[in-house]
Length: 473
Image 1 (cartoon, rainbow, N blue to C red):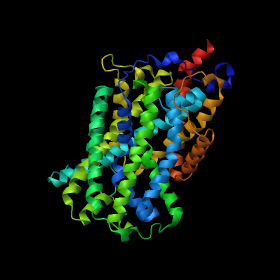
Image 2: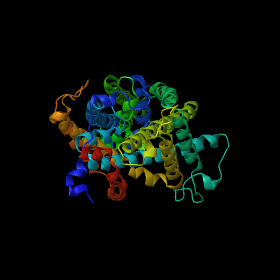
Image 3: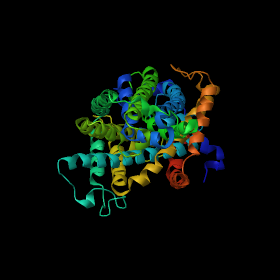
Image 4: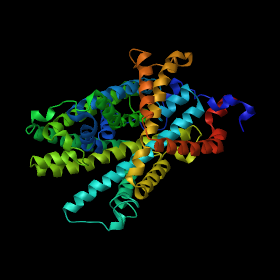
């Protein structure tokens, strides 16, 4: 029952002031470079070794690079909106915190709960892909796990599988790494990102010598409509920068470094995706690229098998960085929601030595690892994207209210979205359009997840809300 029967209690807003930015408990150890490597680590994952071939074969043909360019442009609109929020309100929680300050508690809870599903299922799905690549490497050394531990029950092509053991183990290892401290996690991530980019550049340099100009004709076999459809698929390759904005409280100079980290990671990722796509369709005719490993196929066709082995290792490294950043983002989101009283206090308790929410991190890692172990990839992957698009849309719309509300005019900011209000509105419309392209099954599961979230909110969060208690004083 609503306090005093007031419907407005559901939309109480989080108060922010400059004093909140000075001491938040989390250790401030990240720089613009750390944020950029985190962003690249999350954005450039297994997808760069898979999606360019599928998009080229089914949608864009040799013009696959245009699909990535269009997707990058659409995503950059949301990135600009994130940058303004993160430089104005440098607090953990990303889109959840931004929306809490602008639209109020209930909408923030719905968005935060949706993002928790995105992070959980993203980590689980990447862990399953990591497991498959890792087992392929083991097979090269004639090492095979028992069939029952190779994949989740119901996985296509694995009739005897019961539990994906490698996926479970790697997710728990990532949780262990994160509880050691954000400085250590960021250092490991940076090293892996550099290795991953080196592997991608190796493919581009080696394969570029085998490009055949005839493979670029016709440039758009499916027309420009195919480019747009391909962009809708390619868009999801860029969603990792959301995790960067969850790090606001652990950045030494968030007002300067957050916009740099978000935009720089998007630019680096776009260059890598577009460059690899151009070389790939130049080496292999687009009609042959609808395979699970198009990059490996290209290297096989040009008899560069030694590079293919390195690329497989690079894919494993690439997915490991995604696991680190997405797990980090999920734990910091839960930290922020718990600190606001909407989840139990234990979830924002920090280790006094490492300044990390340890209980939160282990619980997140355990749930994600169980999902990875028991749910087939085909089911997990369908549930990742809708929460992110919802967040992008609300953050884009939120910028309009951030600028127009007098409560926020005195907050110092180092970045503002250009061409206001056209870019935020355009970003909002583009995200809603892409949400409407998602399958009915995804919407149904999203609805079920939100119902569960509302039960938790009205059963616990509403009565424990810090913002609502402050409002009643």
